Length: 286
Image (cartoon, rainbow, N blue to C red; front, side):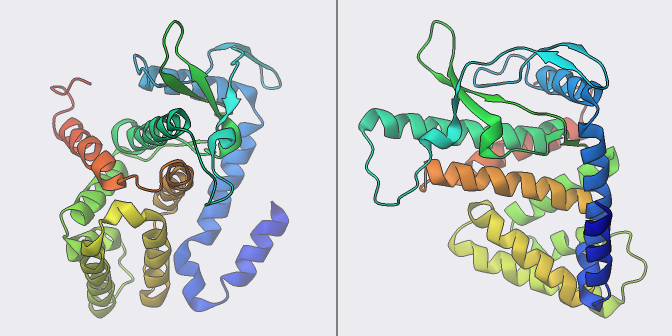
């Protein structure tokens, strides 16, 4: 980690690179990795995730039974790695049953990550295919996804989570300039011109997305926004970036399973529910 920190510090000598918040990202990754070495942390994360997804029919997490700083005893999950269902060759053919299973798994995966980011503000930060097992609901024929290895998780401060929801809703409503302004909020070192140019670039990005939708090319837009941040010296919130990466990883898995998946159709209802929950926390019921 010290070597990685030194390497990033060397990169940040390049003026524009520092606005990617690589240093804070490394610090956050160090903290997450250190926490992951403590099995008590993973047990607590599992309990929180199980609570967040209580009653969910398609996603579950193993139950932790006992933990110390060095030991974690948890529920054994008998499942098939999700990578087994992923396509390695674009010309690969699937039976009707296999295609149906892949479509269901794709939707379940994106629903899970959108719920974590938008609704629960508690995100499993290590959502690679090796941590996703496919199982079948007891006595039923519907697929489930078990998510393992919850040692790393990210949670925003409530005010930052509200801001994140506002940014994403601005993208969905094609209010690119407003989204850019929200990303610049709190940065006193930015000139009025830099803020305006950054917001105009975000606005143009949103206009281009009208041919698709923002969430349907989420991964490429994250890359574009990072480039704009460097160009205009806007410092991105490192936890926003971490959450964006969680969506991006699941996006890759989901689109492999279903290249026709319309992410926007999956994201908008969850985002609207999250805004309702944020606006009326005492009134909203899941």
